[in-house]
Length: 308
Image (cartoon, rainbow, N blue to C red; front, side, top):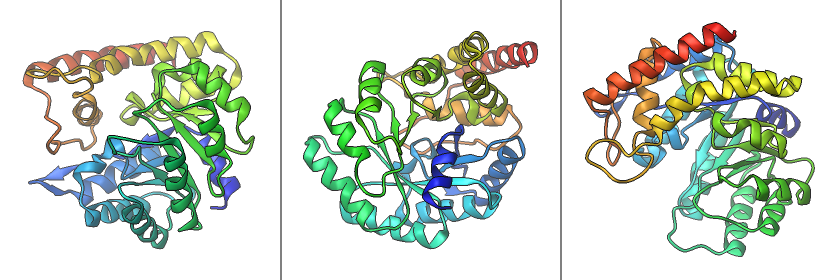
């Protein structure tokens, strides 16, 4: 895809491809089946080897392999973003590997450094962009940058979009106004922020419950684009109970969002797809949490059946 086509892809709902494991190894057949099934249900834009794919628990070789499986399993017209990150050299090395697989864009993972500097971050993104002809999409999360930094980020050669995952619509609004008009802003906090972020200039959103129930995200974005905000609000609110469950710490833990990946993996299982276990430091849902997920999933289905 050229940069224009990638921008078009970023204006669609982006669904993450989670990584199924079998005896601690990647189950590539299950991954391919998930990808094909989601594409058949109307999804056109995919995040391979992403945060929700347990990026940080995959080796370099596994990241390349799961991305290759994803690209091969999806229709040629699908827009596929693959995650790169780590040190500058590691990110550039992974970008080169992904270039050979034909991914459409690189989503640059949030830097996992304890200490950061905005000028240093711009240098980091610039170095990755200069190392590849594939367009990049910085994933802004885990720190609260200035509007000036975000605007400068949009002006870097090769940046076609920004995945904005900060619960601050005011800064988003200011950054959209100050930044390059050719860059697509994407809500990285999923369906609960879709309406607020859309009003501030985000063209689309990455999936939460839409990762296992595409009907919700596709209908939500359509309602936003049609200006039917009452319907959009109703669909957004349907996603919130399961999304709040994802944000919980889980049993025997005080750290927020620990349920995020295992809750989506179990959602895939409930939807007839492949979820399976997670890798440490994430922990699988307990039996009691699975029962809660089942109830929330059933309520989600009932709500969608009434609205759609």
